[in-house]
Image: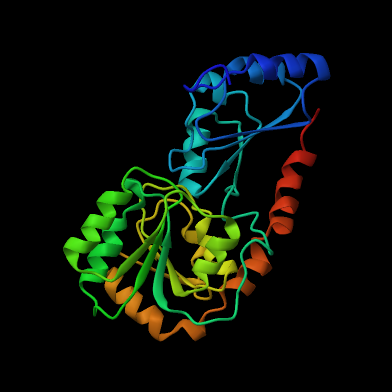
Amino acid sequence: MNGPEAPFGSNDMLAHILTFGPPDILCVWGLGVAEDILLACKSSYKIYNSIDAPSLRVPPEVSRHFDLVLTGAEWQSQEVCGRHPRMETAVLPIGPEFASESTFHPIDGSKDYDVIYVAAAQGYKRHDILFDAMSKLPRSIRALCVFGYGEMSETLREQAVDLNINVDFVGPPGVPFADVNRLMNRAKIGVVCGVEDGAPAILTEYMMAGLPVLANSALRCGLQYITPQTGREVPAEHFHQGILEMLDTTSSFSPRQTVLDNWTWPHSIRKLQMYINCFEY
């Protein structure tokens, strides 16, 4: 990159494109890309995924170049079409879709935690909802928070002490995927507490590790992955009740098989391929 600020431009990337030609497919995730790179890739099939809750995190002069926008919910697709009426969209979010069968998987062993939350130590992940629920539950209920990164880790540790709740913490820094998988396998259920969040990858990552998921019913993207087979969604004020009910019924869920049947990467690649095959190069 030419510098650390969005939109991201790269003279090296432009030189590469001019020397070797544009790619068949160009993917842009998140905060975006400078328009001159998109102009240099005029013949490429250009895919955008916001990752987080705003459907388009780039200005109109940039987003107009995309051929397909991957979204995390139908409202996002409608928002994209409001800006670009003829643009193709697909509710096929990078994250919970394209799940890997091998990265996260069940491991035999004891489950010494009741709840795990794998999420950045940042405000929008709403750890306060989990902590409030824990404060209403018996102190025998144990939770584990795993942080890959985030500026709130010390604050959250202090809050757990102040509330006298039974929570352990790992990170930051983050740990390798194999260790995340091992940590998830120590818990009985996974939780997703956020509201203003994209469709978090952890939704199906928990499930691939064999954990049913309790999600905040106000989560703006990704609730389509919460089914009777994979978990439950409840309002924040009832999160403590949701935890107890799911802990009592963990054997009734089949999260991994449901993801294998619907959302692993071969399923999602076939869906994506339909859009690419219709593109006129």
